[in-house]
Structure formats: C-alpha cells, structure tokens
Length: 295
Image (cartoon, rainbow, N blue to C red; front, side, top):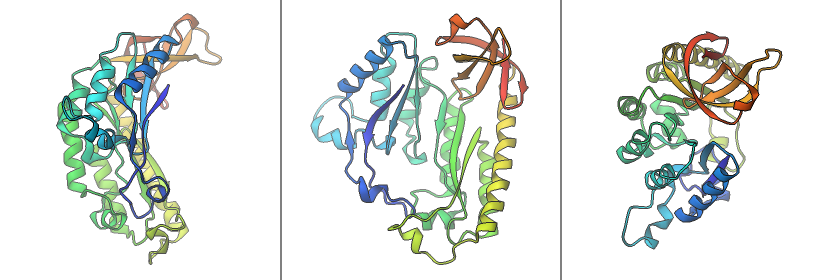
C-alpha cells in the first residue's frame, strides 16, 4: 500500500515543471498518517510505502505547529510508524542524497526487521557540470560520500537511482563520469531516462541540445552498466537471509512463489499458495536471470 504523506516541491531543478504547478509544501499530520497505516494493516497489507512529491521535505511546513516535542521530520514519522504493532514492513520512496541525515539513517538502522534497507536516491548525473546546469543541490563527490555513509551504517543496503542522459550540454566526458560514479556507488538498479524537454522549464530553452542518436546510445550503454551492477549486487546476497513478501504463484511452476525482498530484489522460493501475502524468511541460494532463487 502506498501512503502519500507529503505534497509539493519548491527546489526548481531546471528540467522539472512540478515546482511551477505544485510549489506549496504540505505534510500530513503524524497522527493522521498513523491512523491510515493502522487501517491498512487491519486490512491485510504487509508493506507500507511512504511517498511524496518531495518526501525528504516531510514536516518542513509543520514545524511552526510543533513548538515543543520531537522535530517533525521524516525520521520522526518513520520511527512512529515502526513502533506500531503488526507483521509488516515500511519502505521509503525517492529521496535526495542531502536529505539522508544521520538521524534518518539511524531511524532506518534501528528497525532492521521493520524498515527496508533499500533507498532510492536520485542522482540524475555524475558530472558536476551537468548537476550545476540541472540546479541540483550537490556535487558528485558529496553524493558518493552520502551513499558511503549509508553503506557503512546499514546492513548491506540496496541503493537504486534515477539518471537523466542527454541533458543539454552533456559531453562524452560528462557521460563517462556519470558511468564511473554509478559504478563507484554500486547501485542495485538504475532507472535510465532520456532527457525530455518540458515546456516552461529553463532546460527546454538551453543551447547544446544533445542529438537523439547520441542520447539513445548513452541510454543503452548506461542500461547495460546498470544490469551489470544489479547482477553484482544480487550475487553479493547469496547465502544471506532475506525477508520476502510473497506476492503470487509462479506460472507454470506449481509449488513455487514469487515475492520481493526487503532490498527490493525479486525472489522465487518454494511455498504453498496459502503463504501469499505473508512475510517470510528465506536464504538466497543462486541467481536465475533477474531473480534470486531462495529456500
């Protein structure tokens, strides 16, 4: 179940139209979110995904309402949800690297069986020159350092990301830098997007638009690297215990079920249909295509 806890963004990245149409930050009250999560758990949901237009800014607009008590931020909300009773887990949707504060990382690490060690951290580019034109709030070195802090603090976390290829002015060197940074971080999945101009954004009017043929080539190359990194990460999980939410039977293979692990890895494991919808513990044994086989 997806629970939207925040709306609005005001960062104004040069390629994004959202801040122009949804500039007002609006966070839901903690108790309201908790009540919804309780209802979902009572109705059988076992994974709660917290979402927002800019999830990391959850609570920014609530601070004036909270003169005392815990600071209203994502770490506080996550801790309150993790304390609820029930057999369930929580997953966070997309975040910015600069929002992965020590407090938030600790909130994830303090609840290893409740909060998924999977973070989707939007990189967009590994080139500082491109990041500057995108109006992103970090350099590549800062991004890599924050990912390193996450890896040091959490138990073998899965890091996934978004990357835009073919942003105006992106050179071959810029693209190669992006590939090197992606490999340095070791993402478990890369969502590759070809730059698409949005009317009304600064990026749409920028000079040096990258030719379509070049964008397609770069997208294919980065997708190939993403597959390689994903395979490496999956291999690193072999022999490890995994928490899997069983979702459906495997077609044409009676007695086999398909699910998703806490690290956002598709898993096949033996099991009866009555286990569907439950969280179970399995051990990763081998790889089969883009899935982990477990028992």
